[in-house]
Length: 169
Image (cartoon, one colour):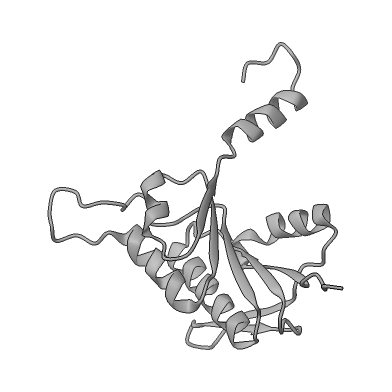
């Protein structure tokens, strides 16, 4: 008999409410993370449970403050990797730096969306799931599988089902 892998969901501070709802719907517990700051303002992360051999999902938006939320994602991922998680999937409801997906006006500007994808690869993320990316071409920046889901229609249908028939959506 083959054992199914244990699945854990973790959340960064930017997506804690969303992650709780997802875990609740899936009937899973939200993994515990010790999250804080050192006295100099650096982010402090500790995975507070055993994830050895587990399939893990990290839900973290990289919305404002983008740099802090992005660094939090990187450090959570590194902590999971060092804790021997078997697989790490990053779920990004918002992909920060997505507007910087190509050169504009000059060859002397970064392609920041690619830099972020490279960082995710470097820290050991195995798969990325994004929501309504600014540009579909960003999926090609990743060296690991990357999927983009479209939430606009789902949100529209949900709002429509909860509103009265005479309201314009």
